[in-house]
Amino acid sequence: MPKLMEACQSPAQNINDELQLDLFGLNEQKIMNPLEPLSKYGLMAEEHWRKYLPKMVAELEAAGKLRASLFRAQLNTMDDMDIISSRAIQLGYTPEEAREIAWDLVRERYIFLPPET
Image 1 (cartoon, rainbow, N blue to C red):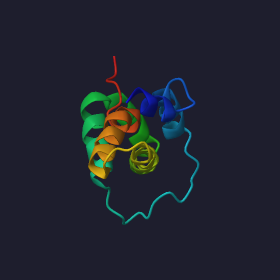
Image 2 (image 1 turned 90 degrees about the vertical axis):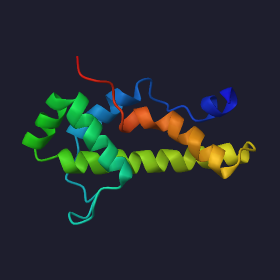
Image 3 (image 1 turned 135 degrees about the vertical axis):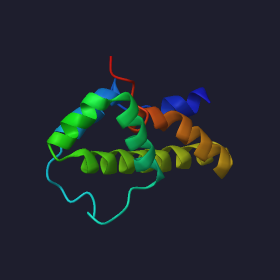
Image 4 (image 1 turned 135 degrees about the horizontal axis):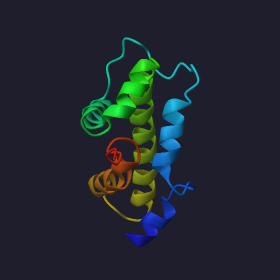
């Protein structure tokens, strides 16, 4: 798996810092349909963020950007998982193994962010 991890590394040194900047610097892009429900990834992110990142959630809510940030986190998660899964399959992993590997590599980038201190 080291080859896969190397192949799937983000060019950013700290993807969480990048996400935080993206969360707070969102343009008013049409990244979601306001009536579209969050996916399982968005719901996981919301639950985790509310529990472990209450200050960040409060700031996003005050700015009216929580929902957009949750959508961005779920979209980034799905996009990264698709890329990593495809690469893993190319390296000989089964689709099930590829999805598991992708989830293991991606889940802390956008959904399970480190708790606030």
